[in-house]
Image (tube, rainbow, N blue to C red):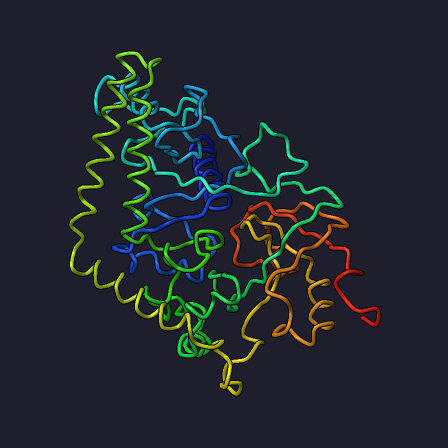
Length: 386
């Protein structure tokens, strides 16, 4: 009994790790199955819902633990380890006598399946000072040392929602109708107000940098798989690759080509859903802020404003300093969209229930998400009176 409990806890820990450290490009075909992610930060995603995992990295810090090289057509397992697609296919083939036998991750021996290997989109981060070069950025928030200059981006998030984007980009999502709908329903029904056309897509402005969850556009999918195909073709022509390695590279190429073929024939429903999102978000991108002219129903109090590092890392300005800036500029509507700050102090933290209670603006982040709260030098940013 104790073994079953410990295994279940280990499974929960793996799920929490992946949910906390990665971002997700999701398959629009499953929208009605996972749309609750719009309001539930700790919702666990099934592998079949995920098109691609967005993983923050610093430089070439991520290597495949099998070949010790930068991953080619990278895939991540359910336990959070990243491999080259040919390498992990080779490992699975050599460690399985038949289809019924369990396949084990070569790092942690967690059971893995070829059907659950998720494609990876590496997202380059900028602020890496103070973090050991051997540690990938996705294994914890970057430790930023004092006196470092960091560019912060003003973010906007509807209370009770996980959708968080730069303020100027948020009008793609937060229409008056949606905000009023969210305010007029209880917590259990709130996610039903969101529609796929008013949800971040991979083509939405700055979504790939900041959105925790977004929907995959056909052009994005095609571009990513074509990039993987180029990587695999280059690996195949490598003079150091032996015949056995080329065999599994060929297998990986066939895998990627099969997905590309499927992308060429989207269903009518999928095309309609994406085209509607493009049309509606393009229209709203030229409109004014959604609460403008409708202050009796939709106000700044419905939103949370805060500064986050402009490369998308979980580096946030302390809310006390945010309030000082709002006072100096005459309200959140007037604070700058971007701000270059000199760090005075930074504190590493992790999302817990207690942290969520203390910092409400962070309750869109998953439990166990590592982050940094920074305090800037304010003398150069505010007036002497402030």
